Image 1 (cartoon, one colour):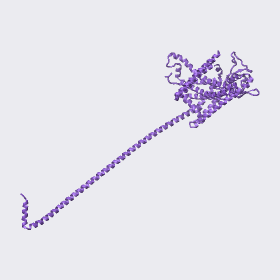
Image 2 (cartoon, chains in turn blue, green, red; image 1 turned 90 degrees about the vertical axis):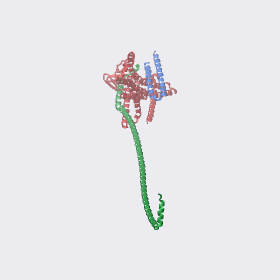
Image 3 (cartoon, chains in turn red, cyan, purple; image 1 turned 60 degrees about the vertical axis):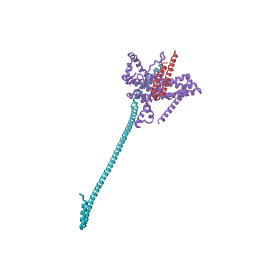
Image 4 (cartoon, rainbow over the protein chains, first blue to last red; image 1 turned 45 degrees about the vertical axis):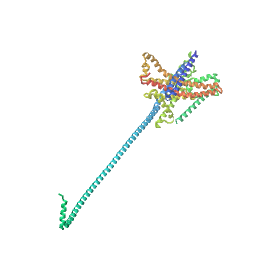
Length: 63
Length: 165
Length: 367
């Protein structure tokens, strides 16, 4: 049964990875569209990425 | 999670809290406070300098505007003065001309009057002389005529003939 | 001038990373030799080494090796052990001989087991319960461990750098000199791009001391973690917990009425929602610093584990293709870790500022 733990954690990490990837990609797009707002976008991106990352780590430690 | 709890150590926790809080207060007093104050002061100084420069620029603008205004006024005044002077000059010339004209007329009139008077005098003189001359001629003629009787009679007759009644 | 300083710093950092990788490489060179003695296989050896590196320790050892005579030698310095066990006990950690022997102090005997000090008898017997947890008494342990020493040294370093920087402002007509020129933009960045936008112009000043200290503290310690000194402070949950607790306490004790109102009685929502939201919001206040703690800890720990594992792969592959490959990977990863070191410090500061901003927010109209 212990294996399931790791599979679950892996799934969550994949999810988190996709999430952070999307955040990064969208932020890039947003910056390309509005380069003058790049500072604000970067901040928002980092915060959002950090929050998702937190979930990922929580999963890792729970496993 | 269990591993995390196992890793927790009270000693390290207390040390970290004490050292970190101590560090915050030390740095507040000796580093962040003075640094942030200095930066603020500097920013304030830069802002003030910019404001001052702006003010100076405005004042400068005002000054140039003033200068321009004064120059304009001076120019206007000069124009006015010149105009007045010109007018005065023209007036004077006109006056002088008139005076001269008047004087001239007067002189001419006087001259004419004098000439007229002289002429009158000359005429009256001539008249007198003519009268004297005629008188003397008449005397001489009368004398010559009156010396002959026939002739006297003839004259009277002629004269009578001329008179038609 | 700025650019030259930056280039110098980057070069220095690169050098440090390279040396770090090389030094860890050196340490691992001993693994096969040890192998012969202990009979453990290489994989377990590397695993244990990594696990050992991640733990705090009672002495400041850079690396250990076994000499030709078969003796186990450690390079490093012992640190003072301070215990409270019915009275203050202070002795040098060299008495433990790196956990190999029992230390005697004031008539009591102590032994290090799994990086914790237990009270034992003269032979160092440790009794276990069913779950293999030691049942021996644990004295209150306030030892200057490796982490405490590093924290202390970093504190001194920061005090030295920043108080000198503060003085240079006075001397040089409100302009910093030397190294301060490079640090000033960072301080300005924290003020103008982290504190002011998140907390607001009115309240940011009282948090600046904490934000600046925490940023530089975490950053410097993260960077030191990448050096071959074996420093691993921010990948100790205790340290990040202490930092997160300070953030939590600051948030809680500087919060205004509006903050509490948003937690316990959220405005502009139906009463039922208010009742449901209150415990969630209250839980949220604990989760926020908890996430802060886990994030910093996990990022740095994960970085160290992955980096050291990849370096360890060199000794497992032992082939002309594997070693350069894992060296290249480790080098690239070390560069990434440099970024992560700064990024985590930034995120910790940023999120702390965000929480402070929530605590002192004035207007009622949003949400």
